[in-house]
Structure formats: C-alpha cells, structure tokens
Image (tube, rainbow, N blue to C red; front, side, top):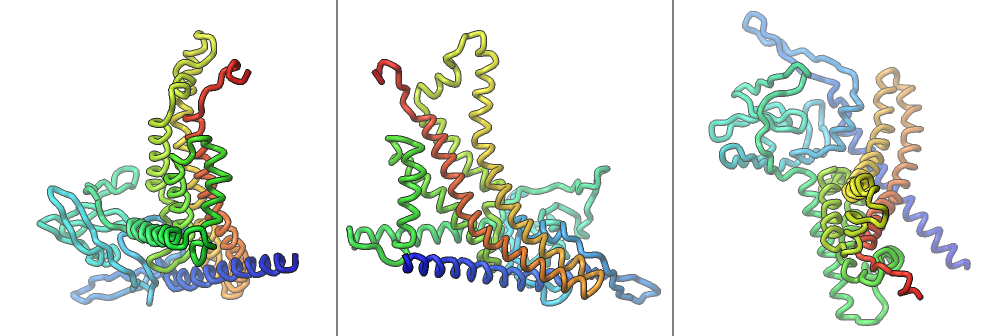
Length: 390
C-alpha cells in the first residue's frame, strides 16, 4: 500500500509538472505573439509630396486573437518580435486556378502583399486566399462579406503538417512496439511498449470487445488506430511549439472524415437483421411511414453527433484557455494594476484548465472509440429468437 501511494504521488506530480510546462509555454508564446498584435496599425498619408507615417492604436480584440490561434493557417506562427513584425514558418501554397500555382506563403508577408503567379494575382485575407487585381482590391457585398473569387485551395497548411507529423509518430511508435513483440516474445514489456500496452489492452477488453461482440477482432485495428490518432493529436494540440500546437482534432473537416469512416464501416458491416430493423421494423405496417424515416434519420445522425462532439469539446477547451489569457490584455488596457491582478487569476484558472485538458485528451478519444464500437456492435450483432434461447 505505501508503494502504491508513492507511485500515485509521483504520477500526480508528473501530470502537474507537465501541465505547468504547457502553461509556461502557452504563456510565453501568447505574450510574445499578442503583445501589440492588432493594437498598432501603421498608416501613411500623402501630403504635398511628403509621406507622413502615423500610428493608430486600437483596442485588443479577444475574438480575433482566439480565432487566429484556433483556426487553420497557411504559415506556422511563432511569435512577434515587435508590433507588425511576426516570425513564422512559411508553408507551401498550392492553388488550382486554370492550372496549378505553387509558391511559398511567405510571399504574402502575413497578408500585406499581393502575390502574382502566371498572370493572376492573389491576396491572403483572414486565412483565405482571394483572387484580386494587382493592387489587391477586395470587393464587399451588402452583407459586408468579401465577394472576390476564391480559387481551389490545395495548400499544405498548418493542420496538414500536424497530420503528417502525427501519422509519422504513430508509425514510429507502433512499428517499434510490433518489433518489440517479435523480438521479446512473451517477456516483460519495456520502454514505450510498457507504457502503451495497458492502454491497448484496456481499449480491447473494456471498450471494443464488450461493445462489438464476438467479431471484435475484425474491427480492433481500425478502432485502435482511431483512438490513438485522436489521443496523440489531442496531446500535440496542447504543446504550443511547432510542429505541435495545431488544433487538428478541433477541425471539423478532420472529425467529419473520422465520422464518415465509422459510418461506412457500420453501413458495409451491417447484417440483414440490422437493415431489416431499419426498413422493415417489427411493428404494425401502419407505423412504418412514421418509424422508417426516424430510423434512417438515426443512421445519419450517429456519425453527425460523433463529428460535432469531438470538434466542439476540443475547440471549447482551447477557446476557454485563450479566453483566460485574453482577460490579462483586456484589463491591462485599463490599468497595469488591474492587468497584474487579473493575470494571477487567469494563470490559476489556465493551470486548472491545462490539467483538465490532459484528461479531456484521453476522454474524448475514449468516448469516440466507445461510440464507434457501439454503432458497429449494433450493426453486426446476431438476431436471437426466443426458441434459440430455449
């Protein structure tokens, strides 16, 4: 018992230390990247042949800051050395507009410059690439939305790089574990194998096997891949240093693809009893007109709920943490004392949220895998008649 308590204390200390490290990194990156960001806008005025530069001070906009950190981007922002001089890693821009246009996102100069490619001109505005004239003029409709043509964007963005990094990590980790099983056989696991084997066994014995049933081994590789893909990307999203820090599992396109995969597996694995329950339910035929549309709607809503659940929970965690940091700048604009007092509370709440996000990283991967297993199990379970039980 004393040894177990000691191990528990060590584990809790490691979790708390990791959360503090994440908080320190987040604070450093956000303070470096948002100090003066969007608060100083340089403009020039032409008067009698002379150019006079003026500085316009604007209020801090927490909504813009939060969206900039949560959404995808064509470069990997590191920090701002000074107002208006950000440091970032440029990424390849690939546009299909009557042919492929390939160039570096660094040519946009963070949305300050028009890029010319094969006679066409493109301008980056709020994360989207628009086709413009040589000046970069944007047209607005009556709803104050940009009406310029948007070419097909096939760029390698921050989320795409994060996807490649997580895929490489998954391959390296599990190829190493597979090699360990071949060389060590039934001997005690070591290293990363000893770390992940309990998680693999837990997902197999406590999630997939009870939910799917007798044919669970057929679906186990896919469900384990989904679990670790979500889990690793959730953890990577908590580390705000390139090539980590991307909000991949908080991107609705990624969660949609995962949900579509589950939907296709359920649809193609469903047996005759599953489809009969949907299109020929065991109720009076007069109720089929009402019940069949509801059953079909349920089939479509299941992956839709999977998509929204993961997207909303992961994005909400990032928004809450960034919201706490925004309070420092909001109250700091009023007075230095208010900003300092708010920073203490913000850091405390952010530390709590960082620890909670570590739990959420595992919990959301677990919930997605559990629901996917239940959907597959309901589609593949055998129909048992009363005489069979007798």
